[in-house]
Image 1 (spheres, rainbow, N blue to C red):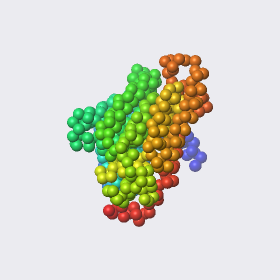
Image 2 (image 1 turned 45 degrees about the horizontal axis):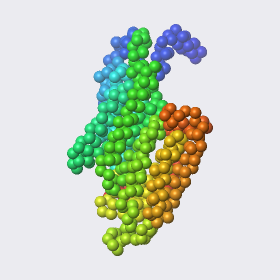
Image 3 (image 1 turned 180 degrees about the vertical axis):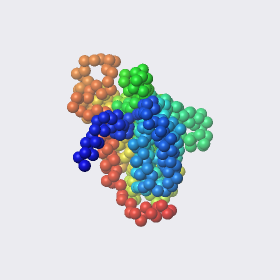
Image 4 (image 1 turned 45 degrees about the vertical axis):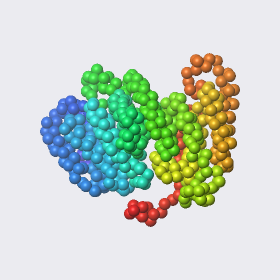
Length: 507
């Protein structure tokens, strides 16, 4: 009898090939509503499917603080997402529920991180499988949720909010590289909003307008758009296609072009690349808004963003003047105060050790220095100068294969030699000496290599015209230096005990 049952099942699968195909539907493949409507059982199953989707949506919104149940529902829902194309009234509420779970600010436990991940996977699945222009709704709602959440991404909650913001930013980068055409439309609008905030601050200079720019929310939004453009222009984005009718060839071509597929992909990537220049100008304008010593950490944030853009697009975006301008500040040449106080009795010799060990300053986690004793303590001075020389070395490494590198590095070498004469601190002079040696080494190579170029200087179009074929590209070198820096930071970062963490939460 077992054999006869097996034969019957085999014959059923052979006789009804369509049924077998439908039971193995690709979760990430769009299903056009017309394709479902052609099924003879569509009218019978339609009310049951609609009831099932509404019940699932209600369950998602009413589960409360039950991360395991939310994770199960979101994970099980993946097989049914393609069928939402026939239920547009349920698609948007589902997107809203998933975005709410993805950006929930309350729960930061490990269990809920899996809920965030599953919620994003369903958002991405909706963006891929639902008919155009549903993906634009996904791009809009996710960015607005990120911007709202980024208000709370400060150094005081580095162990909770910042990791979540990093995850959310990576998710948005993934979404915006699905469809270059839609990504350009939204990126243009939101980058323009950042420019309008900056213009208002430059024109009015009121505390309210300046605080709208010099805040964590603005900086996080800048970081996000730098990451989006870097991923898209650098060629790491992926493409997807919207749901369309296979019988309509013209509609296929039109939808493929909308999602960065086919012949229009390169043109749409170039559209995103056109946003690199206005975003660069916004970052430079942010640096120039209030050029005082207190906002040196924010200027260093902006330098990192500009270098990331330069590396991903292989463009010349110099930040040397910003970094060398920090060395020209009067606070750098003044006698540092002791860590414990101020006044005449708190001063030490110029370039001295400050009367104690240097604890270190985590500049990536702050936007401004304290009002009192700004850039006067040994801790602040050493942290800022160390960061300046790290970024100067990275700048030198980015443009080392440019034919104009000897002229580019001349200003750096001259200013650092002057810095060595003005400063008596041995550690800072060692930082400067290392950068000078690096510039001279690469200048010698560039001078010899460019003498063999056939093209005249005005005919050289590539930034890295001197790069040997076996050497890593500008972007690869940048990624390697950033990865090395993160490893060093992880090793040197002190370990905080669980009791100290709990004490910080209680405080």
